[in-house]
Image (cartoon, rainbow, N blue to C red; front, side, top):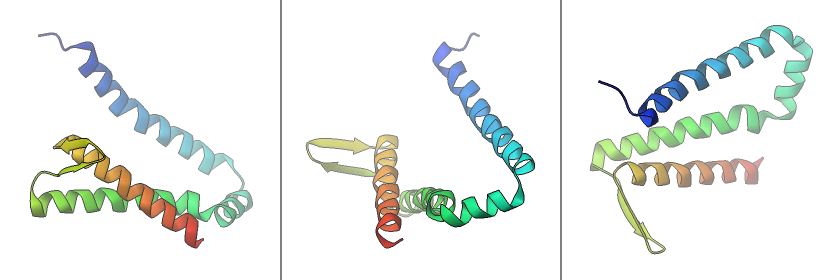
Length: 106
């Protein structure tokens, strides 16, 4: 049975993107001087540490809300989101609010 190209592309991207990110990160960590990495993290801490933590925390909130209250549904501004689309939109709003708070408070 042949898979549709859309499904095959999704699987290729699901594997290729993390592998490519890992290769780039490993290359940077092994080739960049230690002093440069320390200075980079020190000067851009909210972007290097804060945004990934905000993304993980937003995923945590969306997953916990789904587990405690069932499928995520909401309506607003003339739009109606249910199921996976509701989770994606909730994640985006949560992430943007956390990122905005990091920007505001840093």
